[in-house]
Amino acid sequence: MIKKLVLSFPVDATDRPLIYDLIRVHDVSINILKAEIQPGKTGSLLAEFEADERGIDEAIAYLNDNGVTVSPVSSKVSYDRERCINCGSCVSACFSRALSIGAPEWILRFDPERCIACKLCLKACPLRLFKIEFAEV
Image (cartoon, rainbow, N blue to C red):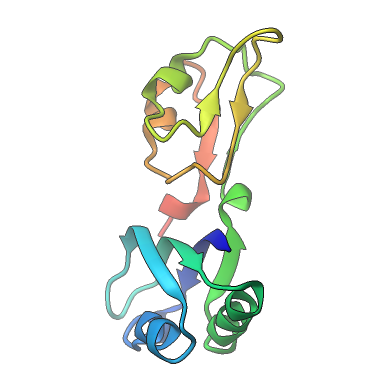
């Protein structure tokens, strides 16, 4: 099972080898997609966790026990669907193909499992409808 998660580290957790422990002790494969972590400051990390369901649950519990907030990417990336005009500008900028538009409805679709929080949709959207909380450190 692969699960894409955003980890938010408090100041006191950025100087501990938590990711190392997840890999070595909890046997979770981790693919880091994006990280903004500095010792002595809060940090955020977007990563794919690969393990069986129990292993991922244990990893999340370990992180929570160490003060790290864990959330799915879908809760960190959003856009204002009501104001969207389905122009497709964001789709052309989205190289991970998390955003798509097509027949027969021609409405914008967002797949959070594909999203890598690259922020290109923020720049491409003419109405500035996208919001990515991951980048707020």
